[in-house]
Length: 121
Length: 151
Image (tube, rainbow over all chains, first blue to last red; front, side, top):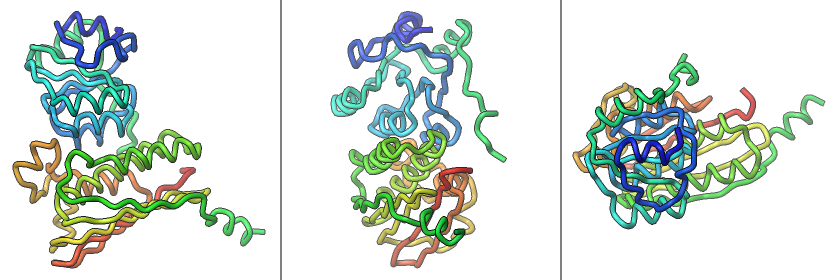
């Protein structure tokens, strides 16, 4: 799915304008814990989170994530949005809770992260 | 010839020192992103860059959260990347306990940042090819990590 289709499906507001809305998204990870995102998430993944501070955008930058969707209508500060604009990381805000957002995306064929890819052992 | 090869692998490609401010959550991670971008320019493999960036970011967050300030020494050689984090601060009394997944002394503020779940040190160790940590209570902590260019 293109990010713009995900935006429509989740009734989400784009907080960073048109940036990245044409990207194709295949994988999503949902987490509020950035250490878990760092531990398990490869690049090319869209993050759904309730964490709206700087560290969500910084984590996305470190991992080359495709973008971030903030759940429950949360909005990060203007500074955080500015950082995302600088780094070309699309931010969206959906009124839906994380569980529902994930359910909708799963029903549209989006899948979770491929943990087998990370050599854990 | 073998000696010559070893010398080449040990040659210095790039070195930079970063200083990390304690408690500066707005800047936390900037050095790690810069390190990632430098390695991209040098042409390291994306998988290696990923490991370096993750370990570096975790260590940088630890410096911001737990110490009173520290430095990163970032060294790039043809065959490997080395990161040395040295901080001034309370130190770690029991390193084997701190290395255990889930063990954390984080405050609520740190947890609100999405960190402090006791995954930082194990995450660094997992991503580095060589990981050494030494710490002295009331002095500080030193973490040295090596990442091979070719696994």
